[in-house]
Amino acid sequence: RQMTLLLGIWKSDFPDIFRSFVRLSPACFDTLLDTIKHNTVFHNESNNEQMPVAEQLAIALIRFGHYGNYASAMKIALWAGVGYGMVHLATQRVIIAVCCDEFRKKFIRWPTAAEKEEAKAWVEANSCPAWRSGWCMVDGTLVLLFIRPGFFGNSFYDRKSNYSLHLEI
Image (tube, rainbow, N blue to C red; front, top):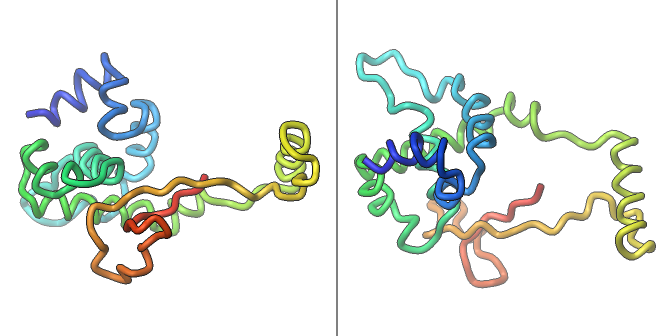
């Protein structure tokens, strides 16, 4: 199974191959995994255990990091050796985990006054001095989606005639 290769040999010995699939370094993947693995969405009271959180995260990240036919549930299900429904479910669980209040409060925050000043000084020194006050301006990237989302789909239609998410860090 290729998932075993991805999370085993490729992750430990071939980080460039690992990164080409999940779009994260192994260390970043492990940090994200440690952060979300205790979320209740990954645990249940059933006699049937859920798929390991690392595999669910890998499936979701592969979907997020690719577009077109490669991001289809069918392709990823065949690659990972799981059912099509599991691809949707794993993706949904990861989205729920990173959208929860605990995750957002821990990782998303406004900069302090000192951090703002440091950013302004960097902008002034490395670009146009007139842009100094634009400390919060960041050029993001578009993450292309394979299909129109079912909920509020038109909201995801971008100026380049694609369905996408705008990611800014």
